[in-house]
Image 1 (tube, one colour):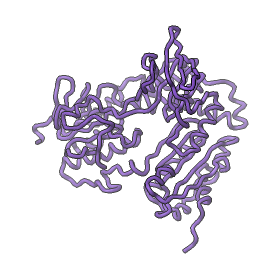
Image 2: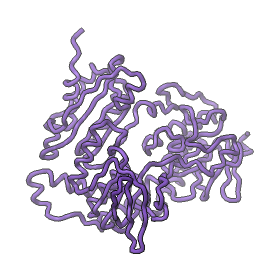
Image 3: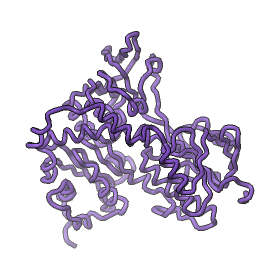
Amino acid sequence: MNAEAVDYDLIVIGAGPVGENVADYAARRGIRVAVVESELVGGECSYWACMPSKALLRSGHALRAAQRVAGADAAVTGSLDAAAVLTRRTAFTSDWTDADQVAWLDSAGIDLIRGRGRLAGPRRIAVDDRVYAARAVAIATGSVPVLPPIPGLAEAAPWGTREATSADHVPARLAVIGGGVAGTELAFAFASLGSRVTLLSRGALLDREEPFVGEHVATAAAAQGIDVRTGAVVARADRAGDGAVRITLADGGEVVTDEVLVATGRRPNIGDLGLETVGLAATNAIDVDETMLVPGTDWLYAVGDANGRALFTHQGKYQARAAGEAIAARLSGTPVEAGRWGAHAATADHVAVPHVVFTDPEVASVGLTEAQARERGVDVRAVEYDLGWVAGAKLHADGYAGRAKLVVDETRRVVVCATFVGQDVAELLHSATIAIVGEVPVERLWHAVPAYPTISEIWLRLLESYGRPEPK
């Protein structure tokens, strides 16, 4: 397809943070780009996920941090102003308007096409009643929540994460179904705002993390007044005429609540995209190579949640930077570096995905868990250390509670996983990510001296637990 026969070099379906980054990195290389968006430019993260949820959590974190320090605790005499927290949350969403994001697209030379985009054959995108032609197409449509098939639940008008993060009031009672990241975060947020929260989880909280993670978070949740029920299976939900929701559990127990929030996972948002017009099935996710190119094509890409590789905003943006550059390289006929850690390859998706759960305590983790590493046949050794024994942590909070774990590949002598649980541990994560991506030998890590007294001293304590290598 020659340049004269197309409307754009690249059309991106979806103008969330992932789509914006694909478009931006391609446009920087002189590629003519448009993005198609049916909702707000900036996507889920800006308006209903990352930003508003963390804004809801932050005030409670700050209050409890002060309450954990003698002297400061005496100055904290009241509770959170829930209305003020909701107002601050709304400020982070720009009151659910996208004028600033649209202005940024314009400044970057990227065209915006409003409407629902879907494929209409190879290199064709239909938006409402118009069909556009492009040399390349990138699908960046994110993910959507999954509503479990629980009798009566849909009819009970449950909240999803969107309704929770955009709520204009704090319910007196809130039941949360789901003990994963979104469920636990929002349970902490609404408990701090004054709701009586019941958290219902089939398994342990945050059970994809190292085992001690869920234990620490569950203990802290209970201390904050959250009724944590693990092993809880919801059998039915019914909203009564007075507005209350009655949740029936499989063991015969009941929970009566004013609102029920369902946070039981998400799936790639790839339905009704016209994938069948190019010979693809809208199954669980779109398969891609390391440059986000769909195998069997030389023009179609799927980036972020749409490919199901790592459903985190930051990881999708990482993929987007690689994909935008790769698309521009292919369209301009320049070499593509798709090998391991190449400029156009999203290698970190497989070995170094950092993520933070903004509960209180925070959970920060990167890389494979010990169990995942062993399942892959990696010869590993793990060490753990109580963060409460670190001087810098003690300065952050009296009676500091937390734990850290390092998993080392014994064959290569490099870190493959680091997990931290505790107050203010999120900022420890990037050092661990660098150690994993850089494949820094354990012997060299001994020369990365943590400043005293900081929480980063945990690195020294973990290395001491692992053991210093004998001189050669």
